Image 1 (cartoon, rainbow, N blue to C red):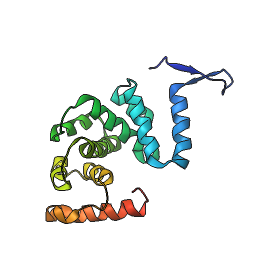
Image 2 (cartoon, rainbow, N blue to C red):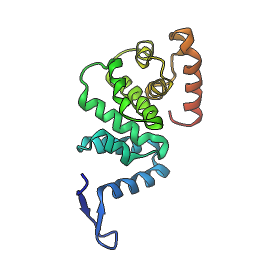
Image 3 (spheres, rainbow, N blue to C red):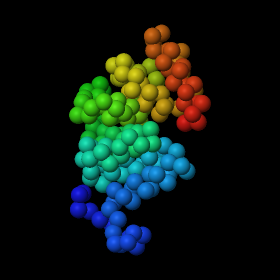
Length: 170
């Protein structure tokens, strides 16, 4: 990956690294197409062979970490088969601080995508991690059936639903 270049007449030398192109694409898309394109960018990094730590580094913290979420989602899709269980959460242990929390959010997205089931069967997979739960709630089709959850999970579910609706993420 470090020596992979795309020849392009856009810059003075005629060479732009794949990372530069992806970064420019992410910056442009951030203003135009919301987090879906950022998810897709992270997914493409992993799909084309970047190790997860490298994809996470390339994604960085911009665009509310949506690129990082996509990289995690694609990595999980490639490396874990069948319905996911709690063990996949350990994938995020290799990251620190905000990358760790955003990896857990990406795992929440992956739980919804790869597991059949209702919200009440998905929420326990996060083991109480609000970062993971926010990924589940964001990925789940609204309206969220918060009333189906255990009483202690309902307030965060409802606040997440309101937040995502206000932010226009649904």
